[in-house]
Image (cartoon, rainbow, N blue to C red; front, side, top):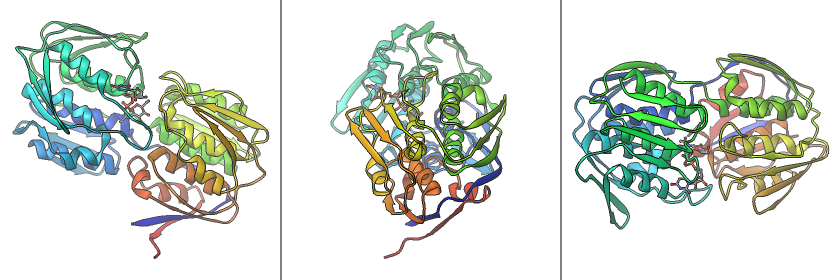
Length: 421
Ligand code: UD1
């Protein structure tokens, strides 16, 4: 168990390449289960969630090797279709293995992921979609048993909410289904497109329309392929929030700026200058920010819920009153109490956070209780006067590769140490 120690108010300067996307890596690793061959995935970040996905693949019988940021998954010898409770608990998004297992093995047994730090996170949409594709589901208490009744058969599935995980599971469950599956009101996140791109390279037939319709024509098998994971838009936005609140001038390379168009306006409204190219963004900030009155999290292409916490940290010292409405998850302001300990003035009323900008935050001992909330504490600490000690790093390590080294390379005074006492 270690802590991150930050001495704040250093300007951030330099160049930083953006890591590969966690939320793309996980469903694509799950998709490797479908492949009767070897998948080579480049740009896979070093993250504890990726390690957890690899452990699940190995448990299922895959042979996984890593060479730097390239993971090779040999799925020819899959021998098991159950995921035990300890592996399910390591990572909530392990539910995305469900669709692949049902496709490949025609049956599966999984423990329910349950709620988590940011809300209840039900899986009702995943389950009803699988039922309509021809899967029977048996509730065994804490585990669920899945079995294809006769065959997987394409159908029309209309989602009541464009759930990212449910859309991914439907894609994975229907690639070998007989006939055509059409998903209406599907999620449109870049990670969905990346999953479709990977599956299509393996020989699947998936067409992602621009208005939330996905059409999947069943094929007989998926073959070996090589794929490069897209850049992590949330990591880019987190580090941009840090530059905005500390002040500085940083060029983020290997980004895909088309993935965060809904957020660039927020940085500009706060007073930052952006130079945006297709695959890089430079952010210049004086560190003196203005409040942004109306941020609402929405499904893509709206403002991403995952960027809400770091942006809220950035706005703690913006002049005026900022308002953020969280529309996706019910408990996503867990980091606010910790920001208040650092001197922030934030009121949360239900799904709305009202941030009254203060002149400066001060260092404190704070604890990360979820991934993006944890990254918000790092952003706040970098801009705060004095020393901040952040514990609960297991949450941050799920999604940020070597966070302290990345920020050190921009001049931040940040280090990881063994936990005291
Ligand atoms: C994914 C991302 C997560 C991001 C989220 C929303 C991964 C690994 N995680 O999570 O980082 O914050 O998308 O962009 O990609 N819901 C239901 N029933 C369901 C499924 C979802 O009610 O069956 C609700 C959830 O409780 C939540 C909302 O729908 O309130 C969005 O969830 P969803 O889009 O499914 O998020 P995840 O796939 O879990």
